[in-house]
Amino acid sequence: MEAELPEPIPAAQQIAGTIIRYETMPSIASFLQDEGTGISFDEMLAQAGENMQQRMKAAVLPPGRPERETCQAMLAQRERLKTAIRLYFEEHGIAALAFPATRMPPPKIGEEIEIDIGGQKVPIAAAAGRNSALGSCASMACLVLPAGLTTNGLPVGMEFAGLSGTDREMLGLGLSLEKALGPIAAPKI
Image (tube, rainbow, N blue to C red; front, top):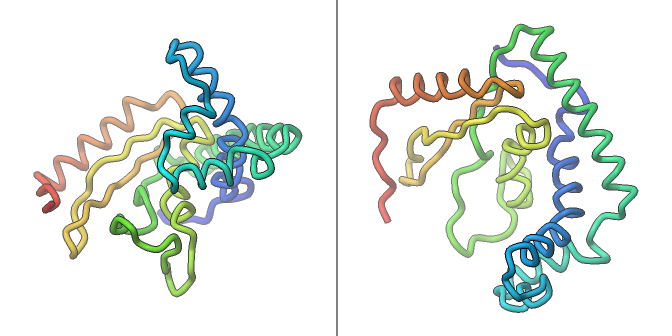
């Protein structure tokens, strides 16, 4: 069955992105300290490549890091999202959602930061993360499996997402997909 998802479900990527951007720096800093690495977040960031430094500075450090109030609002919206998903599954008798893991095939290394999807330029992070954001944000049981190769020989994945606690059912769907598709050739390197 194909169906449109009600609000706030389509906002999952925005919700998850805001929470992730707010929590990244303190979570990594805490991890580095708890694990006794002897380095701080700033020292770790200084060792990262320029591309990663730019991304981290733009998204998870002030002024790009969301304000606490914004994150708290997204955490509340996340709870509404979980409720909306549960109700949607119950109302429509849905056992699982099935969709491509990403909205596009994997990009080539060094490819531009925007890609074309249906004639519209989309930031690569939005294209790559949109589909998987729902399950992560809504605490769903999710499974991503290889589902074949593009005509250019690049791997693609299929994701199954069910309500929290349906892990066994998602694994069963995964086994069924593997059986139906048979062996999938490895991409040529």
